Length: 433
Image (cartoon, rainbow, N blue to C red; front, side, top):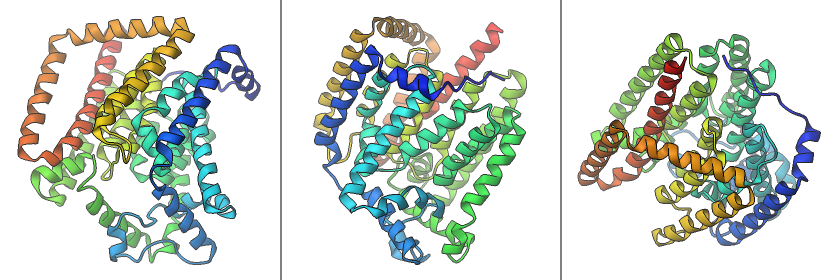
């Protein structure tokens, strides 16, 4: 089991904010926010925030914010379907006019992304990495619609940073699961890492967070049926493994059970790896976060913002790796209301910012060069080129079979490739030991 990083102090964090390098990077961060706000954030209605804001007002008026089970409203995809305790984050904003609340919430989510970077990197406030996260298409989309992914990223970062604190870590993880139930597999990490007290506290906290929902729907069973109905509607056009399998086998039920079977195989594999190799905690934690994304029945591009946690937990060169992450995000998915013709401009924006930030810190530039050398060595391995070839052939075949499966295949392939990469590092860890 790895040692947990020390939490540091609030005063250290404040001092890091006013250092010379942080001041320059902070200025770039602020300018990036203003440009992104003007170019992207206001281009479309913040549909997610509007749903939460309306639901919070409905709850305060003494009514249930949930749609009636079995109605067409659920199929619309715009009804409130989250656990009732999620509205606790939005109720304070109902005291403000909608437009003011919307802007303040967006600022708060940008702040949460920056704090998450601080928690995951354990060093000075890293505005540079924060900038590259913000210019990724995943973050731009999340901040356009004002989804809850920045909140999830914050809680995941908090649970990782305080993983050896029984109370803070376990409650943070429970709060993340209490917002998005697809993160439930993260409880497995506590069992695998033998943090049994933290597991017990998290399970109890999740029950406390979910149980009140049953009072606002007819029962928790009815709430489950709402989620299944929503899943059946949105998975058809989403980016999940269930979506991919549904398109290929033309059966939602078969796709569901295939995904469940793969989840069981993945769980047994983790148990085996933990028992045989006992890798560092970061590999298991990162793998389970990725798997949570893969097995979620509903996945949209902004969900992948939480994969930032995986990148920063594992990377030895955060700036270089996050540069690749941001570039790749633009290739895979574009922000809402942005046409594919804008992709080269998005990539150019990321590359220009990355070059500027590396110029400001030559140490990070050297780290990024080392990352490039490592990627070059990995790319030369025969097994890696074979995997890319197989993925390309399978992708081409799927594209011929059904072009609607291409986006979900691309995302699922990348997530599974990332899991394979983690497995490669675990194997190297075993050999070095």
